[in-house]
Length: 363
Image (tube, rainbow, N blue to C red; front, side):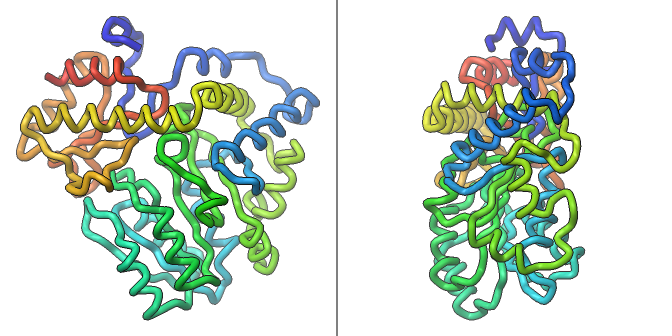
């Protein structure tokens, strides 16, 4: 994607924190004539997608997809993995960590928050202290990449603390804007449950959610009643990996997911992650050169997929209008940050050329 392509595009090019831009090849894949989801050729596609998802999550445990938003997997994680009388600890650093806690409470579970101020990540030492004082949790819920503020958590270190200080607690992780954009090693880091939507770093339209669960998570789920039907994790993972989705999936999106997973394998997951980091650095260099500031002060906690930028009193609405006039879309800030900080979602298939076209347009 180049500046000239941006100028000639027949639609606004999305640099939102999701949904993000979808490549023309993937849009073409979704335009194919439909087939029945029980036909042999599609069963093979489903099995292939599940196998490729294991590579994406970097795990030898089963992975699958479902036609639903990632929020549904927040609920499924609670209903499947936290007993009715169990407690969940939620590391909240923004709106989506808070959403997961609210979902757990709506499912009748007892929840506790470990909050940090907006723009900050959790300290492994603080988590250790909290768990040593109160270790009786069935699960610890972590938002790996807090989309609302552009903070990425030190997930490997946080997961290690959970296994050390509360070994009975499962580690449940929202990887919505980190999967395929930041380092994630589910098996090595001891992640028990992780999920993401397709409209973020996977650079597909919204509509599918991908997920994986560890062996000990599935053992826990097998002991819990009322797990639901569509997202009964032990059943859904087994059936989908066998090519037999429980309900009719969004067939065009599954085709596009298969093709995108092939493209990611060709690019190389480490190379894709490095590209996201390069996009973050270019964005931050542009921001500071123009008198803005990173909303996340700690450079190590800045998301590689979503840059949240403190406008320092600048006119965010005018900046967004300038982007729109040039054929781009950016975000004007989430929640209490709206109009004070803006977000650029440099995730998925964007490259430095497309990002520089946007930044040049912003001036």
